[in-house]
Each structure stands twice: as C-alpha cells, then as structure tokens.
Length: 95
Image (cartoon, rainbow, N blue to C red; front, side, top):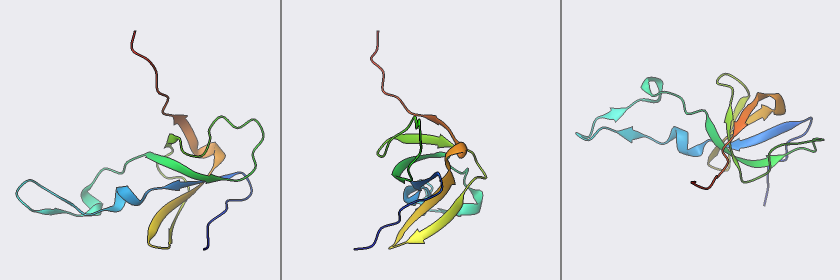
C-alpha cells in the first residue's frame, strides 16, 4: 500500500468530499465552477513540525488559494504549507 507523506513543514488535507458532484432538488447538476469552495478539510498527514498546534484527524480552516491539489488513489488531497492553516475546529461544551 502506498501513502503520501508530507515533508518540509507541509500538511496533507483530504478534500475528496468537496469535489463530489452536487445536484439541486430538481435534479440539475451544479458544476464545480459554480460552487463556493469549502475551506475546511480533515488533516490526514503531517511532516515533522515543531510546536505544532494541530494533529492528524482534526478539521482545519485553510487559506483559499493555498496549496497544491493532488489526486492519489481515487481521492483528492490538498498539500498545504503549515502557514496556510488559519484555524482548527474545536469541540466545546455548552454552558
């Protein structure tokens, strides 16, 4: 089995769900060019980074035009520099 392993302080995000074909309630196909790009993705791999604030498995918000899209083994990934991560989604308890 092969896997992508980021190097040089890069993060690998799974963006496969973003690119699935969507349709309207009446059955019209919405082309990818007409959809707003989702800027949230799940971290699937990371290179060695000191003082890292995220971990594999977390969902993060990333810069819109950052990184390189890669298709690997029928999945779509975004390879992005660590600096391209803006925030992470944190679960909190309701008060």
